[in-house]
Image (cartoon, rainbow, N blue to C red; front, side):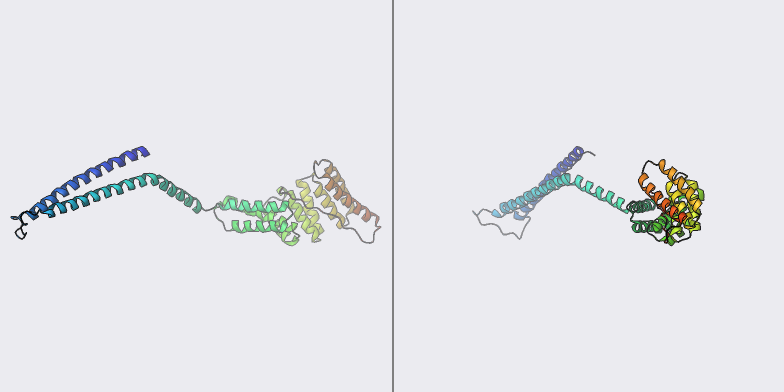
Length: 311
């Protein structure tokens, strides 16, 4: 119903109420007059004393005036209250309805439970942001919170649950290695690799696992996982350099020399970060030369590199 229709309907009701009030007032006034006439009639009222001759009886006119004034006052008071009520209703009802509707909508939105998968993705994104800043400990914290949340089940379908969990395990493993918690990192990364085909694994995670074993001085496992990473991504100079470093550590110098040659060739294909990779390979070539010539009393340690594959 439109606002104009509401106004017309209210005015009709108002006119009807006004007519009823007028009719009721007239009927009441007539009845009151009849009652007063009976009161002053000796026949109908034997107990009433006759008035003294020549003295006007003011009681009838006085009561009638007071009654009429009261009736008119009540009638006008009722009409005034009705008009005020109608005006207030027309003015404030739409705003009140709108306000109530707004509150209802806001309440409905507030009680909608957040989607767990969206929350997990948000936590993982926060972890990736920390990794970009090399804030590895905080990154691991965010991945850990995401892991705890998704492990509770929630509304994530079974088909996606295991895959999501395994991704987070790998991310936590990388963050552990980045923060130099090598044992925890290796455990998580190996758990991650159990859930996928080893030769389809992300190269940066294979590199991180080998990197952890390198610093735990398990050079055999380090060489193995660096080599698996090379098979996944053949033109990656970091993997070739790191593989050469692991071979230098085991004194397999010919293998190290061949790996560094491949690293140099891979750097030529890069469009970014060439200087960084060139410095890395140049240092390990120097270490290899010193090891081959045996001219230094204290052996230099080769360099291995860790890169963030989530950027």
